[in-house]
Length: 552
Image 1 (tube, rainbow, N blue to C red):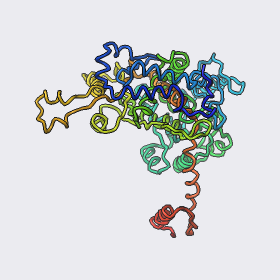
Image 2 (image 1 turned 180 degrees about the vertical axis):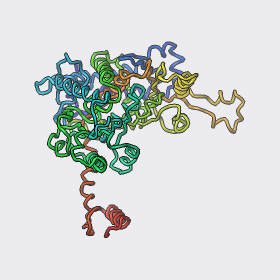
Image 3 (image 1 turned 180 degrees about the horizontal axis):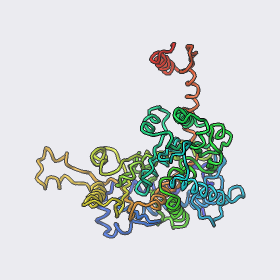
């Protein structure tokens, strides 16, 4: 078995035997067209598929052969992926720059499972928080929890940013079908005052509950919005004691929570071994649990766990996260693709691509290896997307006939949650057709055979050979969503293992935040500040101050 620390010994990924073999294979494969690959292998559509945790993956339309897959799997073994997976599940400090475990899998582990961090079983702590969340959620849902004036809570506003916002927003939108329609849910993240103003414009403070999600209770954007929410509430409710009936916290800073006016009995904690973008199954999911109920939230966690087990135990050749992670490496590092489009054909998943943007790009947007050496290869493809069929009428043109190679992940469900006439069959026809068109295209000869004049024919040609995968599940349920999110979490981990980078830190967000902290008093001061930035930044600050009526 390959030593998982081999990269730390100074060899470059591109010098490794498996990588070199893939480079040679890519050169030999050239631009072999998917039309030819399918013609040569009639069973390709059935063989190039895998299944796990209720998800079916068709990757037959990826530009790979059996040899490509063999070499990619060899690369995974050479990179020590097996050992790295086990290290993460064992609670080892795989977040090497912060010396922390990355144990989001513990958030969805069954109560009987034992997972140790620094010798302590963390599963009982997780279960205790889930139990407290369930009790509180049911109080809000059944009307037992009342606001300061005795009125029932009808509106829940989650205040957070990053993973404390994107996860709850996405989960609520994805599972809205299962939500309590007697409650409304809003989400505030942007420090732009418009975000708060519009989210609360039609709400009554007497019927509104705010969930303030900040581990430290010091996050600038979140706490600015939280203080505004406090002022907004008290402007109507008057009594500072009302804060305790209209605010709860997801945090670990009890002193700051209490100083805000929140009863620490209504503070739901989480742990250093949970990163924000991996926290959807923690107390960060409190708004989700209030929306869909504790039982369905447990189903969501069950879906996560099912994919966790699949990732940990399935052979790599049938392992969905491993296969998708390796295919992304192939497309990114060998075929030269720079982005990946995620295209869910389900309106409920309209925020899923935005959620994945943080998960994938904050995780793998790294330029040095785990031991601090510069990478000599590309990492972190750009993930983006929109729901179909809307995307077909906007950016699909570029995917089909543009000059850039953009691999696609199609996501679809066999059973609709809202069956209306022919709608679902039409929707699914588009999923299958788009993947087929991307793969096989339309040749010049085929265009001319349709009687298209020569001057127009080149414009009607589709090159094809555009790679895609299709994920198909029976129905969008809480369990399916959990499995889907865990799938992308683990394929990100797979990519990171190959590239030898740390997917669990995010130092790249710190510099801009630190500089903003310096600039705020320069914008707000009554007297003209002594500016020591570059000429451009100084000029912008002075112009802004003049436009705000402040001495420049």
